[in-house]
Structure formats: C-alpha cells, structure tokens
Length: 304
Image (cartoon, rainbow, N blue to C red; front, side, top):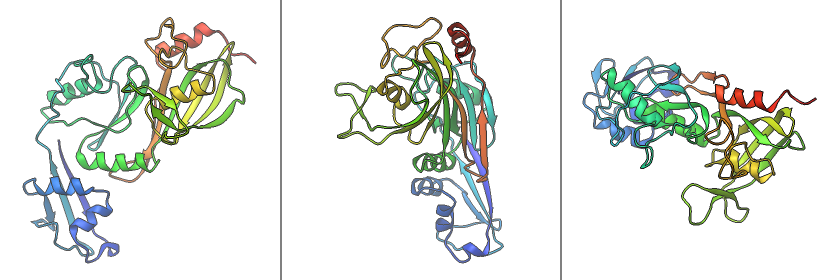
C-alpha cells in the first residue's frame, strides 16, 4: 500500500533530526528502519534527504511509504464486506458473526483478512493485513484495520495506552445484581489450551470490564460493556465469572447451542479513538445485526 504523509515543521521542532521528529509523530523504531529501505522515502522542501538531517521551522517534510508486498498465506477470496468508513490510513468494518478475523487451519478461506485481500487486489493494491482490535469469530461488530505500517504502529500504541474506547452489547443469562458494576479480575490461559482463559488472581494479567444492564428480559438481560483492557475472551470470561455467562457461549456458558446463534451473543457496537494521522477524535457505531435482534424478539418484551 502506498501512502504519502506531509508535515509542516513548526518552531516546537526547530533543529531536531528528521528521525526524532517522526518519532514524535508516532513512528516506531521498526517503522523508521523499514522506511529507510524504501527508495526515495524522505523529502525535505522537495529534496531527497536522510533521517539524520535536521528540520527547521517552515520546512515541508514529506514521507513516502511504499509497501509493495502483500500478506503471505492470505488468499484473496470474494466475500461480503460491510465497510463503515475508509480513508488512506484506516478501514473500519462491521464484521459478521461466524467470520474469523484471520485465516487458520480450519478457516483458511473465509476470514475478514481473505475478504480484504480480495477487495484490495481488485483495486490493484498490495495489502498487508494489520488488525488493531481483534474480535472472536462469533462476535460481530466493529473492527479497525490499519492500511499501512505507520497507522498500525500508532493504533497499536493507542490500544496499549487504553486510548481506544470499545463498547459492546451482549445478552447474558440471568440479570446481574447490581445492575451496573466493574469486574476487575485478572485472566490467564487455561493450562493445556491455546485460547481458553480463566480468572486467575495469582498469575493472571489484569483485566477490567465495566457493565450496565440496559434491559431485563425475563430470565436474561441486555447488557452494555466497556473494556479498559483487551484480553482474549475478556467479556465472556468476566461475565461467566460473576455468574451471568453470555447466551450461546459454548465455552464459558451452559454448553448447549442456542437457536439462531453460532456462538456467544456479543456485538461490538461502538469505537472511539484518535485518528492515527490527523489526531482528531473519531467515533463509529453500527446497528445490531439481524441475529441479535431475532434473539431479543424471542426473549420477549423488557421486564419493568
């Protein structure tokens, strides 16, 4: 993927090296190493220069990113995509339930990555798949994919600093009491498994989930959830930990399939973060998918 990024140098960055300036813009050390290998990558006032050169107030700096390779082992496949937003730096998608994010042994040609590889191949563009907020296969909703290495680095750093706000809707078994709360319980991998997680106060990684009951639905509840951390299966494990597993969750729930569900009833409905290029706060949302609305209708009208 090609991307040209322009900067106007101000007094705040007077006299520093280009490499130092780009680090201030969020470029990682690995980004800088890779960009140095790209031909004709840095221009200062229209002249090709080196990272060690200095910038001065009023200068115009241009960085030309030219990634010619595409992700290996991700075959392009014509699959439907629900694109919420796209620009030169990011693409935000509404992922369908039952669609994996990335190919695996059992799901080699039916993932979001396969669909995006095809989408960009049709445009004649190389594409390296860099997903910022991965969703479980059976979780639907919003996910961000960076379109070049710098956007990926900045967004990954934002996730690590808890600057990407994520809101989910889920249907759980029973009605949590209290109806609002915070689950602060560390998570660790279950011994002998690859993905399964459990609450482990002795050696787990800290995980924090905020929840709120939006509607009581007889013996179930519609809950909204916000994550402070992004551990594997965090919402699913946390809700099971407080005695209210997600409807349809065959791993942490009641181990029985639910009509109309391929897995847990969980939807990533909103994202809020600083755009990796402009620094502006952006917010995205998407409606409840049909499967989720069908379950709500089947459970009956809200109680109270």
